[in-house]
Image (cartoon, rainbow, N blue to C red):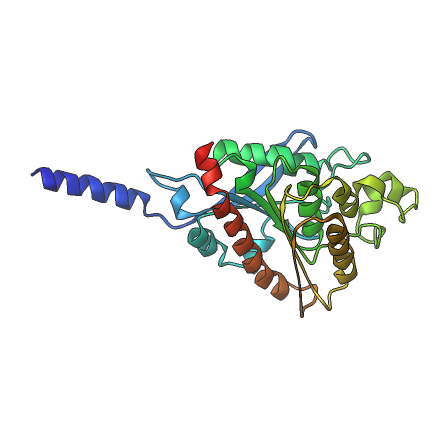
Length: 280
């Protein structure tokens, strides 16, 4: 009889926790911007059920003219990937914000949202591991810029960062991609000097062990020269990073393939810091 009772309880816990990955479509208040921001959260099976486990988080940013649904629409395997790697994937709607705080537009305080408000919300409402060594951020094009920009400025928040075909020289094409309405230097026509707010300028403040960094770009991509410049600046500063160039253009085919490499890189980083978390 005791064996039967044990078996019943065992099966209860197994089936209670045997859920597929879950996709949450939520709205998060962005207090600094005074708006609500739509966000997709993909939860692996391990983060669900009665005996849910805390999991690392990967923040995944879309490109210009995109929204929070882009990554899931273009890569419907994301829930299966989250399950396989036991990670939480978070895709916020960054609009055309460039993921920065604009002094010209009150409702465009996206650096504050990404690096503080979003992270705090996810840590509060989901089974995460609230430690920088268990957080990564990456994105494509404008999202690549946003990932590097936020992680380079907030190494106390993110432990790993990536960029896929990153549009990381915002001085080029600023008038065509909305930056003229976000930054005073752009509004005044001074597109050649964005100063201390650019991604490449943040490298001066990085230290060798601040971040695990992965950057890649297709050799036929119009953003390739900008990625080369950031790579060379990191080399000159002695900052360790993975940098890959492959055949490819500024396309979703390239980014969906690229994400596999980024997630492998991040999971190796998470695993390498697992014992550090346990000891603390």
